[in-house]
View: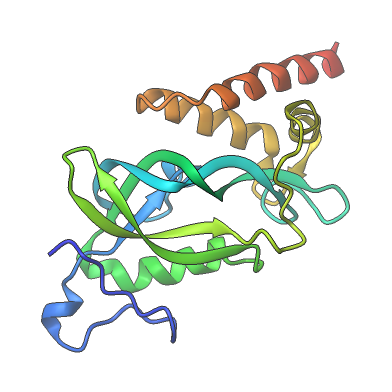
Length: 202
């Protein structure tokens, strides 16, 4: 079976038997996980997640900004009619515990993301469940609906523990293009941010 066996209540990926321990752990990637998963991917498949839209709707105060000058990172904003295209990443079965621990340390650095087990559809039509990190719209870091021009201005200048906010935007946009999942909004932001950065350097 491709259904993951994830126990989210006590934070441990495990099954009651060795058979369930061998069940697959899938993770849905839509942003930095596309180009920097941080774990060995056993299988990757194009996937579609209904009911959520990818956007720069989360203020970053750690990785791509600071509390004094937040950056922006992508998150999944719940929208009933939306569909987000990305990748389903399957961890190696013998590394599932370690991968989930790593992802929680990385993604749940603040409580702005919520970990969910959501159904995603693979390119061949199969539906599997994948660990997915979505935005908590009630969290102080949520900023859905910012005008694109304002997003660009923030991304052009922000810097965090993992580097400049521009790098995050450029890498994600490039990898979506390479995967055949172009995102028109990210293209606009990439071009506008480059203009702003060039103007600052001029």
